[in-house]
Image 1 (spheres, rainbow, N blue to C red):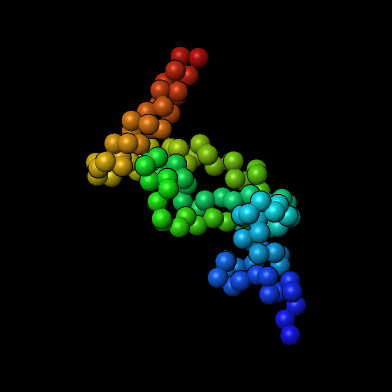
Image 2: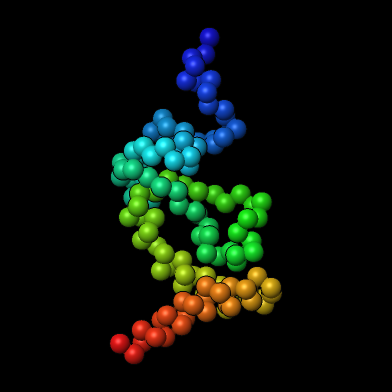
Length: 122
């Protein structure tokens, strides 16, 4: 007979575990210590999007596309935000022009370039 705790988790939630803790628990606000997927330290973890959310324009934010997340500590999660913005800017220049790219250029890319340009005089 299965225990109540074992039966409360459904296998279809998330296929992996972190330190015996279902990652789904972490995504639902139950912050518990787990190993960070980037540095390996045992800390309170947050969700890190493997493909940064900033790569998607605002109109695609609520798309049905499942964005993969991994458990990361706050230091690792916030440590790559400048790199994510730079990567987004580079791939939009290198790729084909389309409506999503135009939306990014008129929104977050334009703002980030304006911000960097205003700091250049400092």
